[in-house]
Amino acid sequence: MDVAPWIWWSTVFLTTALLLVDVFVIGRRPHEPTMGESGRHLAMYVVLAVVFGLGVWWFSGAQYGGEFFAGWLTEYSLSVDNLFIFILIMAKLNVPRQYQQTALLIGIVLALVLRGIFIGLGAAAISQFSWIFYLFGLFLVYTAVKLARDDDHDGDQYDQPRIVRWASRHVPMTDEWSGVHLSTRINGSRVFTPMFVVVLSLGMTDLLFALDSIPAIYGLTSEPYLVFTANVFALMGLRQLYFLIGDLLQRLVYLSYGLAFLLLFIGLKLILHAMHDNELSFINGGHHIEWAPDIPIWVSLLVIVGTLAVTTVASVLRDRAVARSE
Image (cartoon, rainbow, N blue to C red; front, side, top):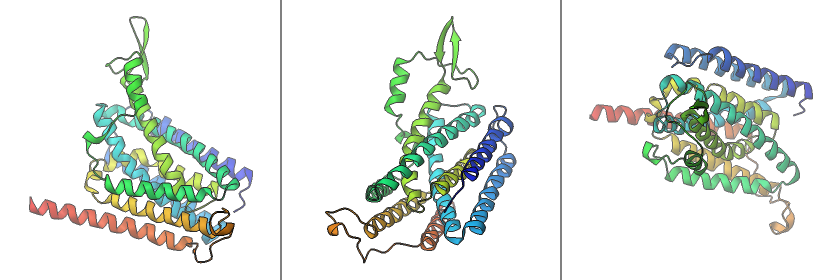
């Protein structure tokens, strides 16, 4: 996929413009969005992602179009799982509902910056070292096993990152909120507000999730342009989704198992790809392994869509069964 520099810059400009509209127009004042507002904006971002994917399909072919949709669906699913942690952070830090929208906007901007850095690092590593796919694959398999074992999104299980705990103890803080400001002045001295702790917590959470999501999408496409756009579109509707189905997320009891299976599948796909293009001298004498298949993107897309559908339906059926038994 040969992406001209002007297309790169145009895409960055347009996606930045959409983000600025979200920040300065849609979220121009601290408030709790209504269901209708959240639904309309979320639908707009989903439609934009679908139109973009169809454009990639039309101009670059089915292979790259399928890679975008596979990457977008995977990143979107992982972003939905992020919402569990965001909800726990907001609850644990007692963030007023009218300030949660601004906190999420800041968290999403931080996520975009961090993922942009990891996308660049991942592209550079892949271009220089093909064996990096072995590491990516093993890391995703490890993450999948860990996620399957630890699927209980209980508020008591969220522990603040060490840097957040350190800042809470060593940085001058106040318990009083000052709107959405990160700091304020009390008796002439500059102190940080609880919003600073919220933003720091969201930033560290975004960093941890970027470590999972970037290797996952590089298992579906090696095109940095598609990796970038899939991540941008996955994060665009995250704030609206938080307010639209925040309470319903607790009912998706099998989501972690579905995501664990997807990460396991992509991890194994990465390992097979590394074996197919093997250059490590201590593995098969540095030659590629003929029996290792390179799984086509249409198979990956079917597995992703099927897994998400089964996970959602199974969660809904279980929720209805529990409701009838009560």
